[in-house]
Amino acid sequence: MDTKELKKLTERFSPRQLESCIKQQLEKGENGCDVIDETDQVITELSKAEVVRELMDKGLRFSEALRELARRIRAVYGKDADS
Image (cartoon, rainbow, N blue to C red; front, side, top):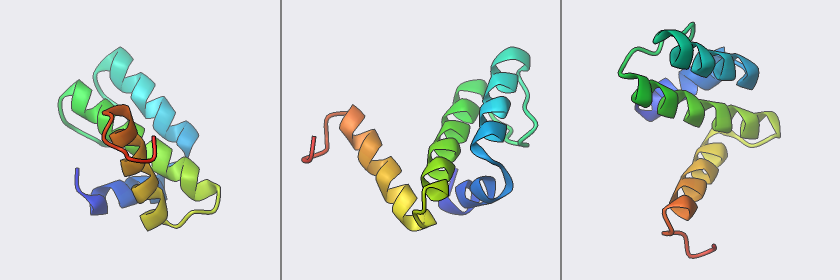
């Protein structure tokens, strides 16, 4: 998913709605957020959108929230110098 699609998801859905779409995808293999792909890819993309939206709800701009998401992902993989 590219940045434009991620931004559209964060603008259209709240974190709660995105979480609901993740649960729907896990349970039914489809979701109400209209993200269509293999289940693992859908869950990954919806999860990213949920994190970005939560950060935006805390006052970060989309670009700042996206950078924070990238920092968190790098930290998980042990590639962040700040960790």
